[in-house]
Length: 253
Image (tube, rainbow, N blue to C red; front, side, top):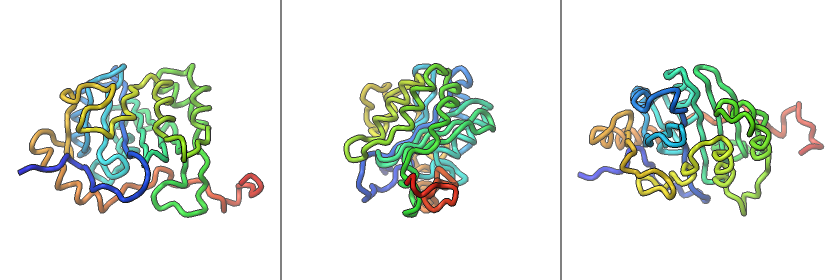
C-alpha cells in the first residue's frame, strides 16, 4: 500500500503561491538528535534537515496548518520546542506567498512576532489592517540570530510594504534569511519531497509523521493529517491591528 507524504493536505483552491513553514534552532544550542527527540515528543510532521550554516532546520507540513499535537501551528510549535530545549528557536511561515510571519523565542520567553500583512490571516475581517506589523522586533531577531549588526537593515526589510501583484513574500524572506545568516534554501522548501534547488541532498533529511519516523511515521502522519485539517491552529496575531481600533487615527489609514 502506498501512503501520501505525512501531513500533506489536499491541494487548496485558493489563488496564490506556495505555503511553507520552518523551525530553526542554532546548532550550537542543541544537537540534531536532541531536536529530533523533542520534535518527536511534540508529534511533529515534516522534515528535519542536516545542519546547515550553523542552524538546524525543520520544515513543517502543512506549512499553514496544524503541525504537532495540541493544535499547534508553526508558531506555537516553536514556542514549545524552545521551552523543551531551553534554546532559541525561530519560526517562519509563508502563506500563499502573500504573507510572511516571523516569531522567535528564547526558552520560555517570546522575543517578538511579525506579520507582513495581518489582513491575510485566515478568518481576518475587513477591519484588520494590511500594513506590516512588528518590524520593531528586528533588533531582537537579529540579536537572537547572532547578527546584531544587521538589525537596522532587517528593520527596513520588515517594514517595507510590498506590491503583492509583483513581489512575493518569499523574496522578502530570502533577504531576511541572508541578513540573519540562515539557510536561503528554505524559500524553496515547498518542493519537498523532491529535491530542493540549492538545498541539501534530501536523502539527508529525516521525514517525520506525527512524531515518528520510517514506515510508522508515514502511517501515523497520514492518519493524523485527516484530523489536523479539521483543527487549524490559532491566528499568528491574537490581537491584530484594526482600522476600528479607537487608538488608531483614521487620518492615517
